[in-house]
Length: 70
Image (tube, rainbow, N blue to C red; front, side, top):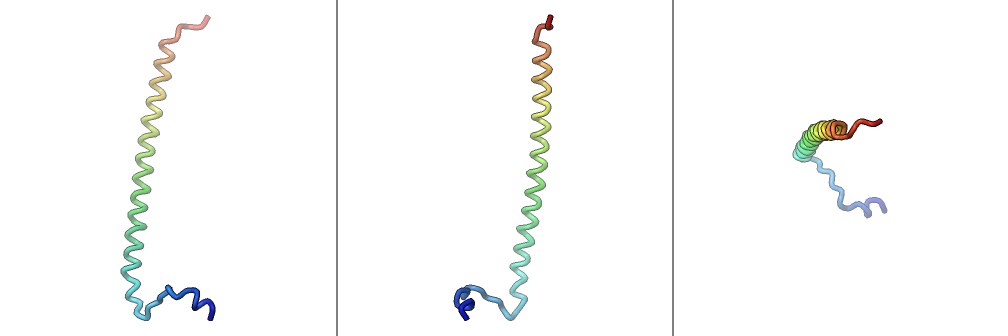
């Protein structure tokens, strides 16, 4: 009896069709989250490639500017 009094906010409807909008909303947000995750991964790869190219360019410029070691 105590547990029933501690959780008065829980509501389980008899008509299970009321769950349909909740599942649709859950599916929508899960799908959007997955698409956003893929977008972030794509942008991260692009930034990684740009950084790698910049690093290579800086290293090649540094090598051409240094005098030969004796």
